[in-house]
View 1 (cartoon, rainbow, N blue to C red):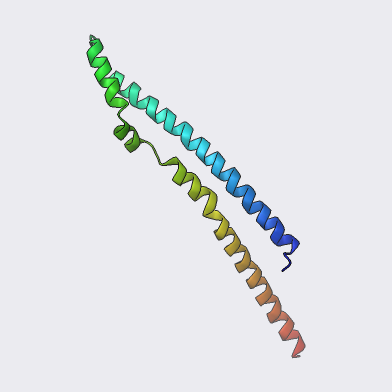
View 2 (view 1 turned 180 degrees about the horizontal axis):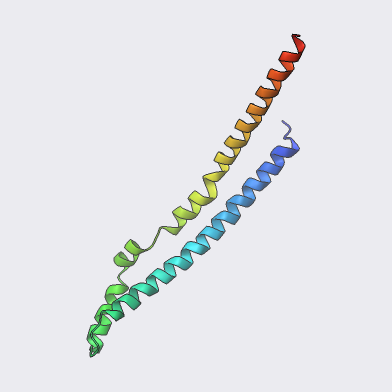
Length: 117
């Protein structure tokens, strides 16, 4: 089975998209998640009274670093990266083949119309 040059280009573009988009999305969501975790600590510190004790400060920061609370605030970055990386590939191939089918179908209609005259 031979693969045409256009299909080979499509395969290479798909692989590049999967790695590039997945890596970019993972890095972007990781940065956003880190900022969200820092914001949890900052928001917690902002709620402390001006004359707070060390115990209040430690309690506030322990709450802001609670894994359950952080997980509720942060996105599931691997799932997001996987969706961004893999979902567009079959959609792109499907749209490409749909366009090619329509072009061939329309062209065939013009060719058949010219032969019957």
